[in-house]
Image (cartoon, rainbow, N blue to C red; front, side, top):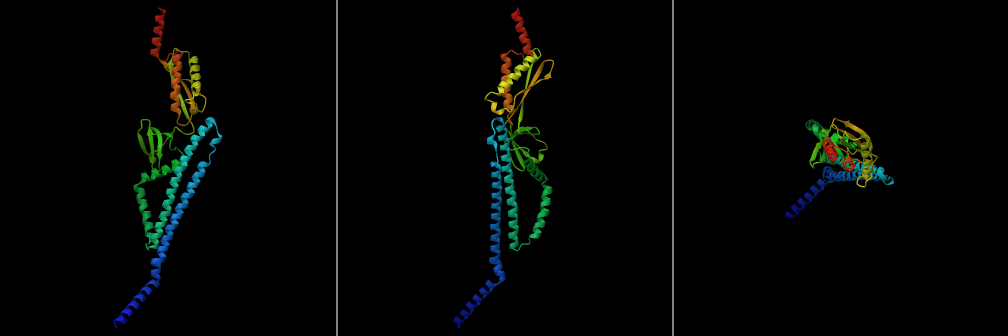
Length: 316
């Protein structure tokens, strides 16, 4: 009797398990849904990998699409500088593209998985829209920074390595994100500037720069001779190996740009490689000053008085 009861209970248990396993809801819960969730995750992984591969391949092809090697001399230097900025811009845009693709793909995957788990995603989407609007109002500065950063990258206003002027800050761009531009000024200070705060920016490294040299001399000197001496010295200085690779043209003498009761100032300018204007200007200042001293050109009113006293002493 006990054996028969035990056999019946076993049969009932087996029948119950079999009935439970054959239930469509059981199949859906333990087989169909897990398989669908795994497939969704696999599709998301494949799509993310595919998007990253396409973006990386497009970036590599864009970087390789360079004909710099066929140029020589100063043209090649200018093109290399522009090519470096273009490559940096493409890399930054590629990083942004990968981030956007990952956000879109995984947001879809999360919603699809929640839908398979029986969660009604429609209210979530509606709530996300409301929350997004609220966050947008509360974080308007972040949104402004983001879109300003996108505009800066697309319009290629400046890039990493450029020397730019934002407000009263002049420095080299060390890093760019969609929210922040990092500048290193001449004193070594690191400035973090929000892209949304950049109303106007001066780029000292776009295509070419101009080195300007102001040379003040005394009114006692012959302006024609001094002008010729300064121009010849500037032309010869630009051919020196120290700055020859940084110069893109021939120096131009613009004549006396300022005349005061005490002195007159001659201006010389020359086109240089992007961001190299200060290096060339410092070198030319040194060369021109040495040439003026060598030729005995009077530079300041005080020096004029000393020269006059020396001449009188010699005459006595």
